[in-house]
Length: 407
Image (tube, rainbow, N blue to C red; front, top):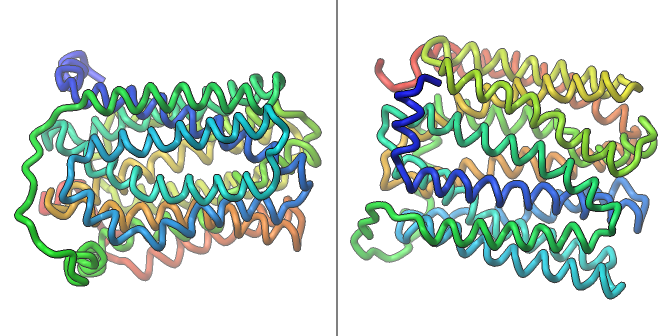
């Protein structure tokens, strides 16, 4: 990134505050999920329960998507994000108390998973819709790449730190998470931007479903977010990493932390490349190609029995996924007017949640049937098939050249 462009982004104080808030919040979330996953597997030894953690995070998103999008388009988005971070402070504190005083069990972990899913159904689309309000349109692609770089740095550091801190017990991890969520909440409360409340209107079915209608009518947007949905739904292996760490690669919590960090390491490297040389042309072919590389990397991870090779495969999958994320998010934000961004971001978040949390359930259920290796290998093949199929189903996306519409 050139110095003048760095200065341009850094000059936007609200964006910088959001960047650091996401850094703290994402690190805390990643540490939390490492602890929950390892604690659940220690308690039950069940692949099904690992998948159930993902399913229960996804279910609230389906129920809350429409009202969440409507709220985000009406109220101050930074304060919504701050509220969500504050609620996660309380959840981390509850997990800390349960772990320290000995009453943390499968039921508590599953109940917290539902709570996290409900909070993130509001937080994720609010964050997505907030960023375009903090920087000029000309800087949006670079801002999203810079945001992704910070996010991936947190995804690298969070699991690695969480795995190390877990040696002192799950309670130590949850206490650290609570502190980081609190920092994120305070930073979000300090964000200021021009928020003009829209005219009061009742929350009718038409206003609630406007985001769905918008996405359906714009096939490039529909193709981009549905591609991510099915690719990660089939190809994700995150929920099974405790099984790979313990039963396939024979490493402990520290190894699990490395495995969870590896995709983010690849994504961070790629986000720095994209911040310096943003994608401007051949965006459609690059998006489809990135998904195909992601699927091939997941296939390699599933077949690996060496920690080094597994980490390399996961890093490649993270780099490919970052290309997909930046292109998809930029396309969606630039194609969407500001007054619709909350509702469209809410729809996009359901697709992301389905690909991540529902994908974790799919992985756990398939692993209970085929074992972890069979589940990941089948998912990698499925992702390659999805990339080929979307080439035919969404020709406008496959031919898309410039990121900005009509340019």
